[in-house]
Structures are given as structure tokens and as C-alpha cells.
Image (tube, rainbow, N blue to C red; front, side, top):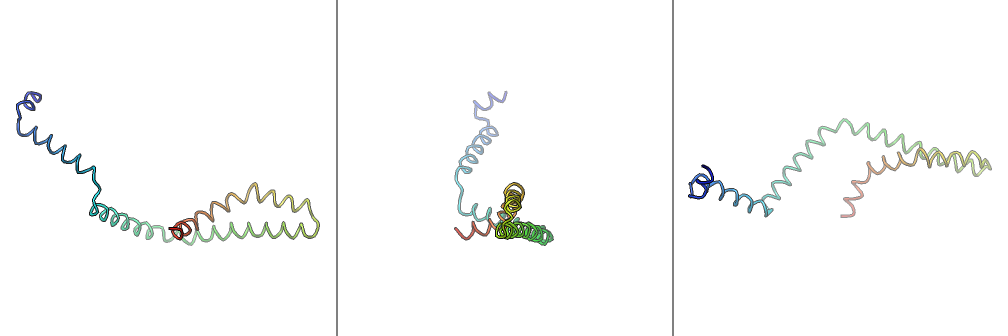
Length: 122
């Protein structure tokens, strides 16, 4: 029956088809008003996110400080050991830095500072 209704121009079916075509055409264009609404929604979400994660900022800073401190401690110890002729100990420290410390250090520093670096380059 619905096929016959469509072919004979039943008003309800024709209205649905026209609405579908109009909605599809409207979805093809992203207007400035839609961009502004989306940006406003994103800004609201981001402010809520910042408020929700505010207590975690202290934890993030402490993790960053500990990782950077350990990296710097290992680096200084390796340089001092090499300066005083303890080549085996210096090699052990630099190998430990390379295998165990550099990756977490890079992740933490990247996570903590990458956003600021990207914003500065724009």
C-alpha cells in the first residue's frame, strides 16, 4: 500500500521525502552560526572539564616533579661518575636512563608541556 501511496502522491509520504531531501541538503553546509554554536558548546565543555579535573593538577605536578628530579639526578650522577673515572658506573647509569627513565620522562614532559608548545606555534 505504501508504494502505491507514494506513487499516487499521498501527501504524508511526499512530505517525508521532501523533508528528507531538505535535511540532507542542509547537512551539506556548515554555516558560521553552526560553527559558533559548536565552539560555544566546546568552550562550555572545556570549562566543565577544567573544573572537574582541578584537584588532579597537584597530582600531575607532583608526578612531573618526581620524574624530572629522578632524570636530573641520574644525569648528574652519571656525569660526575664519568668525570671521576668510574666508567662502568657511568655506563650503568646512562644505560638505566636510556632503558627505564627516558621514556616516562618524555611522556610526562610531553603531556605536561605539549599543549603549551602547540599553542605557541599557532
